[in-house]
Length: 105
Image 1 (spheres, rainbow, N blue to C red):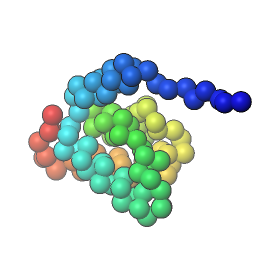
Image 2 (image 1 turned 90 degrees about the horizontal axis):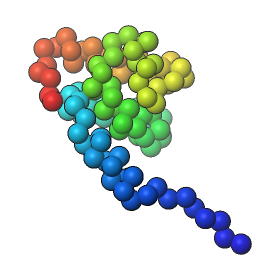
Image 3 (image 1 turned 90 degrees about the vertical axis):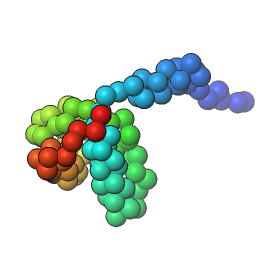
Image 4 (image 1 turned 135 degrees about the vertical axis):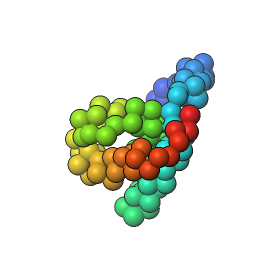
């Protein structure tokens, strides 16, 4: 007996990729968030996507949360990740905004 493995329709995957590609997010901040995620993942011996996936980081770079409540509203952020990683990621966002870095859209 074989079990069928559900596959995401090719058109659905393509549409999802297109949607993510057209998001308006700060690419400089996104790069910083990815670096922090990688450092945390290496330290915890985890794949980076377990810390946060790219879509969550893009949303952070788009919405620019600066409070715990705003951070919690980002898809992929729950109470556990807020407690574990919130301070670090909010600090990166806050520093990016206050350092006078140009928004990299």
